[in-house]
Length: 227
Ligand code: PGA
Image (tube, rainbow, N blue to C red; front, side, top):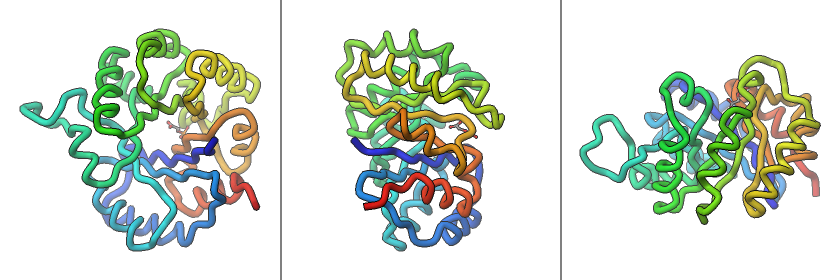
């Protein structure tokens, strides 16, 4: 199984500061099992794709959201097929910030997952303690490939990491339901604790500690499996 190390830049960066982010990241050394992914806002997908290609980086591109509809008369939405042309391979859905500030529901998130499934983009489904049961029960009959990210609300951006034991129990619970889905953790992960989480998960979603590329390199360095 791969280990996913995902940078979630959230609603940060301009074209210029994203180019500097790639400058600061420099060359990347990863082992064959690490999958490094960077999730950028829509308007930066083209710049991110260009930088990754130009620098020949072992990084996959992710979007942070997607329309629940196909292309069409849905003003302001970006459809999964439109993400595809930037070489987007993954897409975050159901992040607690979207559930909280934009009122996203489990049903809406399910529609987004279905649209991604049609297009062949892998959803990175975020669930917290509050949304895990209701969200995953909607998916039990679905055959969509997905990554499940456990993101306890109180740990996001707060520096208050969830304990490894609780994360481990969550991972076991999800694996019973979705045996083939990688399960990752997100919530104040940094270069000092990333390895503890990697012992009990298939990866991490890194917000704050990914905004500065030098710090994100340290997270990657700490996570790297040699050999
Ligand atoms: P954080 O964000 O690392 O800043 O806690 C994680 C996330 O929201 O994905």
